[in-house]
Image 1 (cartoon, rainbow, N blue to C red):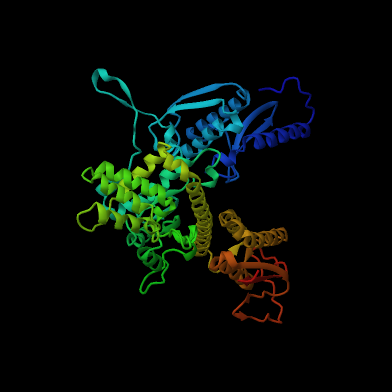
Image 2 (image 1 turned 90 degrees about the horizontal axis):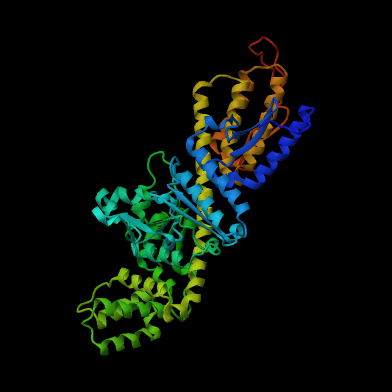
Length: 566
């Protein structure tokens, strides 16, 4: 659009206006929060020759028009901007938004980003509970895993039946697919970028179902966001080691992973093996990323013990689920026996060693003909049914259950955040080392000043992956880049001889340990300080080498590398 009606007499005035508008766009849209593929992504206004137009910038520093970006990004921006406009215009008014297949043209991550936009549109602070969003999709990535109660499943019927609503749709389980693919590869196939690994499917089921049942948009930040964290079952405690080993192969990045184990013999053995403390076992995960249920929820003192994941449930609630399970699946049990079961559940001995041990002993005594493990999944389904029905048993013990679940989720979130940071550090460190390895393939005996500058600028971009751990390296890189600009300003184009060896030592030190290398620049000769060995600087001043243009190079500047000392 032409800037009609505006008295713009100078480029400076136009730049001032667009700078103000761009700040307001950045503040109002906050695109970097929702377009998570690029935290430097921004939408800006530019002015040229009397015309205002939009352009896009990203982490590469390049500027693009809309036509130069993918259709997926354009669709995402259109949805997002319309959502922000609706948020402003519909406040205090009732609104229903209908969308058909909004996932078209969007990648998997783009769909996840769009889902967060949808959530922001309908949250109370945005719409005042007055906006409802209804959309159709075939994509599982536009399903919010935290709120399955929102889902409405429809299917096309045969012939004259037409489209039908499936009233009671169970969430799809991937077990048939995993079995078809084979247990070895299928377990790791369904691992994501951030994972919580549990011992078995019952642990996975009860934790996910409790989060889904109790999560609301207001308290989801106190629980685990199932859209960003994947709950993975190892199928058994001994298989946890196998699962972790299978997820760490080749040069693939190791995903951020936290393991939650029971506090029984199987859990203790699994922890020892995966942390490398058991004999002849390789360390697969740091000890701080392995949680055991009793250390999170407490041992219970003289009361009910915390031994397995099932102990997150109040014993009385679990006991009520056992009674319902017996009534449903063991109709042969007489009423008198059921009374005995009920009385046994009320005794402290039932949960003295955890509800699983108590339930095993109880069912073997009153229900099973011979001693065996009971159907844990069946009992947990009854627990979920009691909670869904808001029964008296559930209402009575719901506050205690919420407290335990919140405590567990908060500890898991702390461990997940630490694991994500460690994964970013490892990814950033490997990226920096690859850049330097590629650089030394070509530059063995000498290098142009500009090539070193390009290398350090690329390393500086990857340093962002290190987060706070990369602050020291980032400061060192800035000092080195500043020195390179001075050298280029003096007319020197290439490093050879002794000066090249000094810069090579600096780059090699960064490659060896990007997280614990601090570079300082002082006048004089190079001095590499190592905690294990201090090398005294030479008293003989170095002779400036001759550049490839035949000019004497500027006097050498000392480059001191401190490894492991900040």
